[in-house]
Length: 141
Image (cartoon, rainbow, N blue to C red; front, side, top):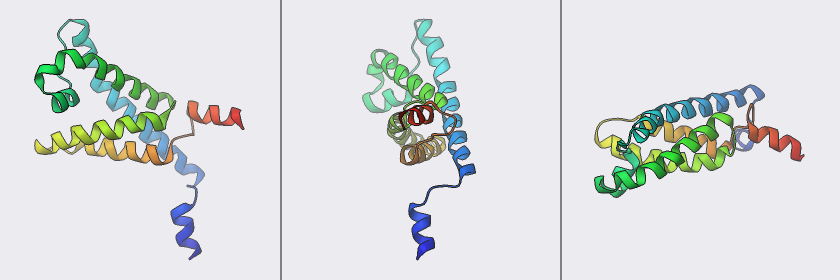
C-alpha cells in the first residue's frame, strides 16, 4: 500500500524535474515558431488566419481578432520559455490546443493534442527547475 500512495502522491525524483523543463521549452519553442509568420504578416499589413480564431469565430472575424490572439500566444510561449507563470500559461495552452487539436483531428493531425498533453502536465505539476517561478519561490521561502 505504501508504494501505491507514494506513486500517486509522491514527489518526482530530482532528475525528473529536468523532464518538465524539456517539455516547457519544447512547447514554448514550437509555439513561438508558429507565431513568427503571423507577426511577419501582421507587420506587412496582411494578417494570417489564426487557427484558433477561425475555428471559434469564423473567417469573417480573423482580421480583427488575430492581433489579440497572436499577442496571447506569444506571451504564453515566452512564459513557457522563461518559466514565468508557467501554470497560468498552461491554462491557455490546454484550452487553445484542445480547440485547435479537435479542429486538426478532423483534418487528420494529432500535433496539437500532444502540445495539449504537455501543457496539461505543466498545469498539474509546474516546472520550477531552471525557471523564474522557481527563483521567485526560493526568494519567498
